[in-house]
Each structure stands twice: as C-alpha cells, then as structure tokens.
Image 1 (tube, rainbow, N blue to C red):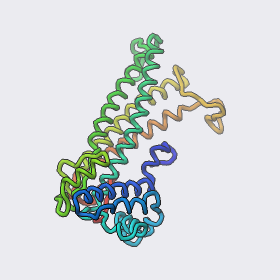
Image 2 (spheres, one colour):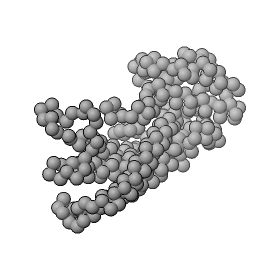
Image 3 (cartoon, rainbow, N blue to C red):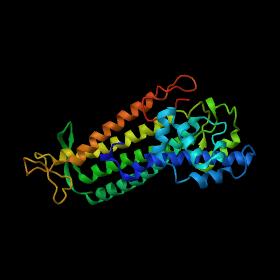
Image 4 (cartoon, rainbow, N blue to C red):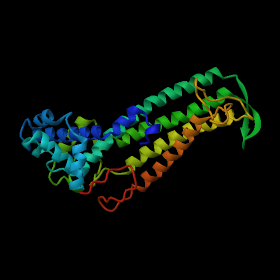
Length: 316
C-alpha cells in the first residue's frame, strides 16, 4: 500500500504482525479441527495459543526466512521457538497455500467490510446533495460544450446511482473471496479430510473452495480487484466533475479549502483541486491492479508462481 494515501485502519490489515497473527489463527483453527477428529492430541491448540498468540516477532520471522527462503517455514519455526513441542503438531498434512490463501481471504474480507462502510457514507452524502440541489440550475454539457439546462441535483443523483452499483459489486466480490482451503498439496486431501477443512474454515468465517488446486482460484481475487477498480472509476467520475467546475473559466463549484492551506509557493491566489486530482490518479492505479489480477488467473496446472501481483507465492 502507498502510505501517503492509505487509511490507517486499512493499512493495519496488511501489517506483518497482523498477517503473522492471522496465520497462527488459521493454524490453530486447523489444529482444533484435527483434535476433534482425533489426529492431534487434545489441548495442543490451546497450549500453542497460550505460548505464542500475541507474542510473534515479525523481525525474527523475517530473519529466519532470510535463511530458509520460505515464509511459512520461517513462521512455523518461530512458533516452535515460542511454544516448543506442541507446535510440532501444527500444519499436519497442510501446504503453505492453505495458510496463505485463507489468510488473504480473511484480510480481503475485512478490508472490503471497511471500504463498504465508507461507501455507504459516500452514498448518503451524495443523496443529501441531490435533494439539496434538486432545483439548483446549471448547464448540461456534451463533449464539454453547453447543451441543455439541468440541475445540480440531477448530477449528484447520477453519481449516487453509479456508486450504488459499485457498492453492489463490492458485496458480490466479498462473497466470492470469502473462500479458503485446507486441502493440502495440489488440493487432493492426501493427508487431510474435507470435514477437517470445513470445520477449520467455518471457524474462520470462510467457505471451502469449490474445487481447489494448490491454491484458491485466482478469478476470485480478480473479481475483487475489478470491483475496486469500478468503485474507483465511479469516484473518478465525481472528481472529474469537480475539477471541471473549479476551473477559473467555469467557477461553478470548488473543493473545500482548509484554513491555512496553500495552493502554490509562487502564486498565492491559487486554490487547486488537488483532492480530486489525487482521486483521479488513484483510480488509474486501481485499474492497473485489476489488469494484474486478471493476468494472475491463468496458471500452469495446479499452480505456478508466475503471478504478477496481489497474490502470495510460496515456494513450496
């Protein structure tokens, strides 16, 4: 994520410590399911949780990874350092993608929940403006040229409707990505049982992948990125409108300008639409990420690591 444009509550979801704690949560959910099935000694998960939960050291894990060149092995090695012998029962029959893809699904779901909540606020603001300016006249344009009179409220209503469609896509994408796997190497349950997978993922709020390979199918991730790109594009529509309204030659509306804010080091009269310009640029980034997500879908056989972005690629 780009720190300058990241909201703290979203950036926190992708922090190393948060990610490693989530990996531990997944390992413990699988361990408890195996305990219930009788393949792991009772109480193992609780002992590991007591010893390791909240105590993981990201720097130590990354240091181990520098030697192992494998992130999940480094993580499990550190958990064993903290918990001792009980940790040796973790990851029984599992492959790295069982942890990584399930964690990515949880992180993405939680991020989408936070984004969706702010989209609701955006729609409410647009609805207020649409009602407020229902009879405020302004000129309609096609090709940027004066056409017929409209109202500002109609413009806000159009934006409200487009953001609403984007919200619906987010909901669908959130459902599509709420999928994990605990099916082992190449997804054939060679050393696991589908009942263990269902129990572990159910405890995490996920569904099992319909037909897994080594990984969760990447069209799910692409759907999320496309939904986010379309949300960004809906926001760009608003930003483009504001940028045009604020042009000196038009002067129909403008962004808020904070007390003490400056527009130029050389031209003190300037009030630039910088928020709208930033939103336009970020929308372009989101569309580029969607392209990367689409390129990730087609992989060799049960998995390869040719993915171009937005997916963890363990070496195992």
